[in-house]
Length: 246
Length: 246
Image (cartoon, rainbow over all chains, first blue to last red; front, top):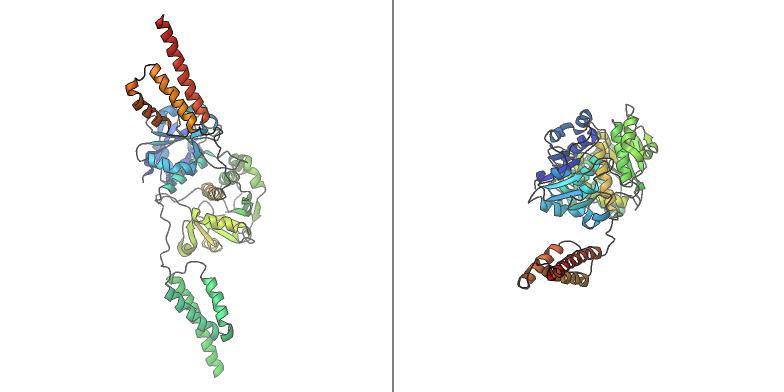
């Protein structure tokens, strides 16, 4: 699923640093389309570049608009983020609840996500342009999110929703039961040989060892390492016995 | 569920602005415990305060440590975030996958979330201190997250995991079926009276109107508004008929 159908709209942003952070967050999560409703004061472009790093191309390719209405005019879905909900609560849901609906809408047309200025968010007239209202969960103690943090959370949830992230996989395969059992046999022989346990305590001790080594996944590589330790320890004990036997 | 059992550990951070943004993100999501492994260069505290805003108290109450080992020494769980996974992949999972495990661990002791410096993350020695490795999903095209954005995503997922967020609820109740049916009757009468439809087309038209008005939740307040419009329109049509009837 391509996230290019989403348009992140920043409405009269105040701080270049925040706009730069927005670009970086967008690129981290696979978004490319940035629209800016022109700020009243020019943005600090040095700050912007410092925070955007490699994502500054998103800023350079932005579209520029006089009003939010202009920035979203060809969008089917216009989602606004707002903490002040008032009249429009009835089409407000949390970010995660909106994700399936938005991803579905993005297959048919452009979906705009509109964010207000840092100091007081979208105006009531701008909220009225939105046909989706997104609530981003925060504690009641401090509801005000930084602009780029709000954008990041929206982009992150949508990106997760596409299910396109492939976690880095353990390359080694999980060991088979017979590899594990062979390893426990080697350890049993070793722990007896080095004098860590005796025949009478061996079963109990081996259950303990199994518990410790069965908590996470054991790969075939892990099993080879554990076998190696046991064998080497065994060899030392054998050598010692030979010397003492002399 | 109280998130005070989580300790956010920043290891030799470089930029005051990022540390300030971390504080704000922590407070947004209900976290309070910040530990800082002392940076080599002093942080720009003006930038820090500018980005932390009301959350600067989290910075003021931080603990200070010479090493990551010291910052996490009394923690049962130490989770590290890393893009470079190498040797440690076997206990790496995505952020969202770790959440239940971490919330469970936090009921028994302190859980540390460790973040490396902005320029190259945690060192291999520091990663070795971690018994959980967290992968934060990003696109392959640009994996490098800003420090405060990485902290925010971790805090956000944990906060969502506590299920303590109460979305702002629509105060008006959803209208009952009988309220809705009464409204459709009033609209039917009105649309006939104002000449918008005729007896022959009324059923078809009313199905269309039902389809339009049944897409979202209709509250009792919405129903009263829609009834009011119909009645007022009806009144105008009646008045016009009276005048023409003269």
